[in-house]
Image 1: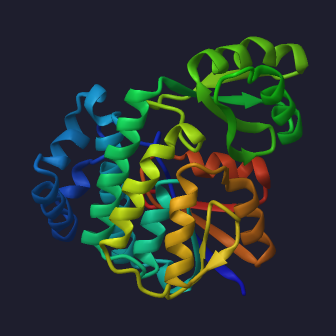
Image 2 (image 1 turned 90 degrees about the horizontal axis):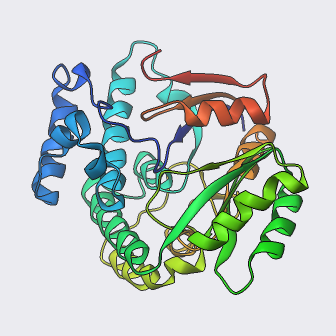
Length: 302
């Protein structure tokens, strides 16, 4: 298999102003935001345009906001004369972005994805409010070195590797005090620095366990179809089409490690030669270049 892959960003890619003038000139995008606003009970486009950032950055708002914005940008890409969508052979999304990938692959309808993502965001927000947590990116160490650092700083607190993004960029997630210990000790074992992520809690750890049952219930309430093309799972960095497998993996993802580097390497091994980041920001393109500088990357508005 060879060709093109679409990549969809996750939480953290949101920013006030991420919905631009393109919304007014594309009726199909306006329709997506209108339908989402009716479902959510607030003007989603207005929040994406004007904020305030304190609201957009909340987990319960940022997750549906990113889903809808990325799907709207996908429609703009579909309308381009040089649209690559006919050549797409695989898709992947970072954490939340996996739901956008599932929409493109026909696994979830827009309404069903919005239902699940909205409940996922609320459940994760509730967990974050119950258990004070944080996430920090440890730069300049290997995964093994970060795992050893986590073991040495865990003590009796929740502390786990959450995201393996690219060489030298591993995200650790856990209780706030444990994250502070990691940040203080990282330099002593050779880390360049740590960068605290602007998220509300300790995502992709056991501190999200109480969100699992709520996510599972939301997933069981909607229809999952067989994927029309392989969707790379964050959990095992392998392609999946079976709806039951995908359901199970989405539940595991919320408390498991996001294997993003391994996912990209699988795509490269599968002869993917062109990568399109579909969504706000350019985080994924930056990670791609750190995995392989020769990777061909594109975005919707380039």
